[in-house]
Image 1 (cartoon, rainbow, N blue to C red):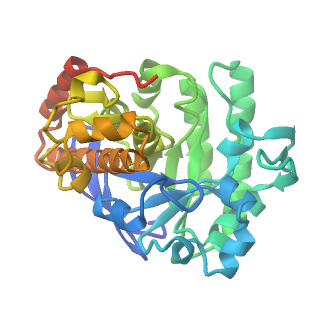
Image 2 (cartoon, rainbow, N blue to C red):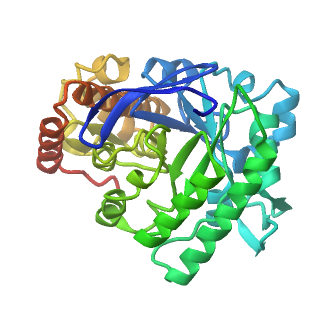
Length: 377
């Protein structure tokens, strides 16, 4: 059953829409989780994040354990109180940032020893320590097992080694997590682009038993086509009665393709990162507000999205803010992008419920291709 009931209300092919009912509120799926790396979704207040339609956000174990420290967050009442977010929070395990940001000293069966990217201080992260930080100190609602991530391409031997270690760490994470009624633990499928390794990983995780299952090890260099190829089979390897979470994804086209293949949850820094660099995501692709063609464009980004940043400010004004390097430009574009991603999720949920996902998907992909994606470099 899992710690939180997961009800699938409609399906359309492999796609599902439903509700994951947590102790802090319902999460409508498919769901997009804004990334609150260091206790904040960059440039936005929690009220703006909630108003965009987000039911849940993601917190980052690695960054919070280094600054202000998980112990300090716990003394101040936990992450929900600390950042004034009352809805559910999912925290990642810290493994991705340990592998990508820090200077790793050693990875062993027992732990990962690493140096902080902030001050070079030495830290040790074990599956048990990761669970304690997430569940007990930060107080997250959905906790992720610690896993070992490898970038792609890598040899099959290296991918297999990391996958099997991740499975063993999943067992240790489950033991450390124990039995809890108001928190859930998700396992993470690994295996790179190998169907056999993905299958083995899924079997190991199912034997352990988790409240939900993530598809990890993608969006790490394999490209859109490579990711979609894995998603053609990986979600179906996971228990259909539990939520499936594709970690670190992604662009709107990635999300639509993943939803069509049975994925329920997503997270990505893209909406706010793009917004800070003058890029807005729309139904017709992304646009670069630095472009001179917007200098006298009096139309809003999207009058149909119930967000002030999308509806109430002209593209000319946004162009001016971006060109002038005004902070408000970063705020408004980040806010619009997050609202657009949530509007996309709402549209996907409605399309699945109405059994018209194929038509929605075809129209969306055609508009994205026609509109294109403008560089902000």
